[in-house]
Length: 79
Image 1 (tube, rainbow, N blue to C red):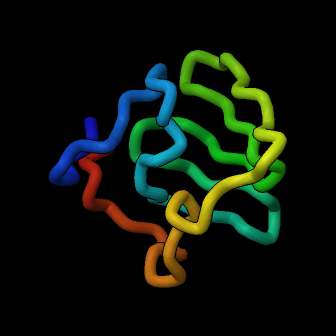
Image 2: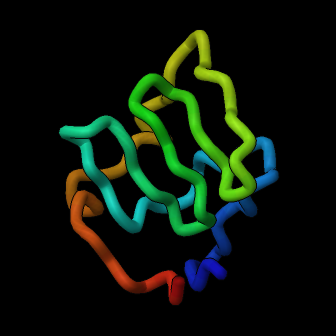
Image 3: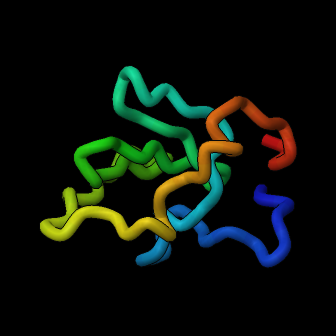
């Protein structure tokens, strides 16, 4: 469960990719978000239930990309 305020979107929300990253492996092309979604660098994603989210034709906006200060493992989500 996300402890961020305001809370991050749940995994089955249409904007699930807007959740904050808790682990990133940019060299491998993926990030784990606090809602359990695995975000892939091809703009696709995998939800915790195994459902895939198709890559976007337009990519992610700068606001959806994690800040460089969030590139390390954090434990603020209580997961």
